[in-house]
Amino acid sequence: MTALRLAMSAEEYEEQARNGEPEKGRWSMDQQLLAGITDSLHQIEYILVRANSDGKGPKPKRPEPMRRPGVGGPKKPDKLTTGQAERLFQLINGGAA
Image 1 (cartoon, rainbow, N blue to C red):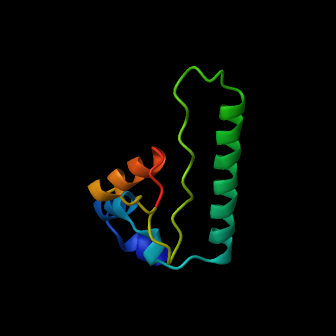
Image 2: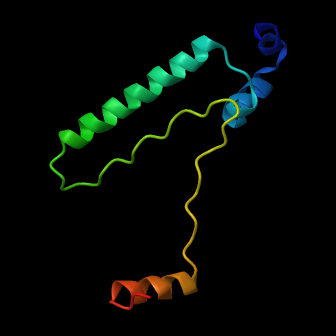
């Protein structure tokens, strides 16, 4: 891998760093463990900030895990259709069944 990086120009290396897709590559066990440690540290930092905030300001977003090989990006939630929204409104207002 080092030989491949050394063969790249500075512009190519910068482009790969900016737009790389780690989920399409292979990681060693060390890289997997480091990603897990990084995710854990981000979670601890998030919990620490939430626990020590007074609740008046904006809440920090929960950290997303590092992208790993073979795993796609975060899923976007499905949008509620108009029909689903109307049905939900009926159920909330006592119109069960």
